[in-house]
Length: 187
View (tube, one colour):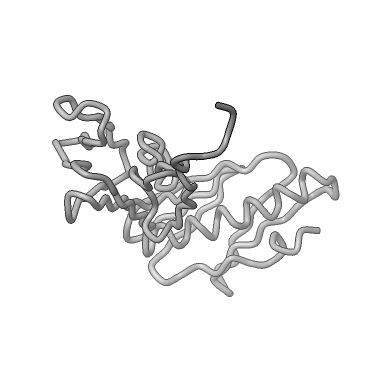
């Protein structure tokens, strides 16, 4: 039995959880999320103790792994519909900046200064730019927030020689030394 999977997930105040067949729906003040359970995993809501328990019918290795996974996903859903998730990105480089244009994020990240990179903002995600070099991604789905942040970062990952590019806030980029002038070699 999974150590993580057997822990019950507490239901916060103001959150409603319903289980229909293999579909878990979590509704809270920020929105609604759904998760379809597969395999031998099933969920049951304990209204008296205000918690959700995930149960695994078999002892197969794959089902035990899914048991812990689904418990973590349901716990993330509880946090998402109450507090939400946020990722911050920093843009570093001369002339690099980000602007919002409707449902698109314009990124000027050095490929061509006249034509920006356009990133379509998916439904369920809110992107703000407090400054031209900062991007804040918020939403209730942890996976979607992280995926959008990773896609934006992949448009111009940090350069290992100069450090220019898009990075997560607080990310330490390992820099490599450049070529040394006057290196010894064959003449």
